[in-house]
Image (tube, rainbow over all chains, first blue to last red):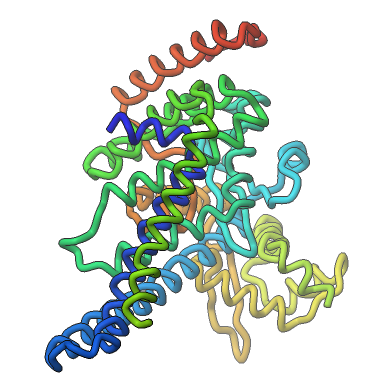
Length: 272
Length: 146
């Protein structure tokens, strides 16, 4: 656990490691079939089992990728149309958030989010503009811009696809949660470079405290809601932490490469 | 194509809704696609079919209501901007805890309960203190803390 926290100070490298570990798992599962076919000494039934395993994995991956992708895109499109029709522009905000389309909804609940994709949007409410002084607002906008520019949504989509491709009993909820947190920490680091840690930390409190009582109550019964807020606390405390030392970061990348290379090498050896 | 460029920015949806609300305020509701197209065409180059498509989508999304009148449809706003926004936000925030919603849209924050906010405030105090001593750069004093 302490180790994990330390790796959060290198969110980019940590995400690379997670992706390589996940990919290595996929490669290993898909490689069972070619490896079995290549090894001549195997009985026929074993080869059949290996083929079935790999085929099932491939089918689940493709199906999950299709389902998740369709769902996310239609959800985003529907919501973007609502936001475009109902939202207004705010010139001062829009200028500061050069490059992304900012929409302001006429609503008192302070909130901020972005809709990734080709037609990306950053969505704020009038409540957000009232609640946040200029420095906190620019911190929030820098955070959202970092999400959009680095396409963090693709990282999340990749993990969601893998998550759903795996049978429910084998799913690692913690892994998905950690990846979500790392993506937020990554955007926080970008925002910190623009606005400094203190405005960003203040914005985290301002936006957490402003939600309507009804929505705050509604969120207490879900197990994800609680984790979400302790994640906010983790993010806040990471704001003053320096980046992880270079040695650790290089080490993490080397580890990621090694993890991914292992199943690939094994396959090459087995086939060749 | 000029109208395509407008729609890419999502301006058209808003312009259509504004026109419909304006008509409603002037007592000219419901309106036809022709009326909306005529009004929008004053300030931009726009195809009739583009306006028709957008209005159909807005009706699908529940922002406009549709009623048949002869061979054409007449449209009215389903509610005021404030009410529709409130409905959208309510639906949106209540669904925020679902994994799908959280992957589709990246939120700055999840919802927090009262105790969790107190917890966050304590963490903020720590951040402010650590930063003040660590960086030795006094942060600009903010006079009015709500």
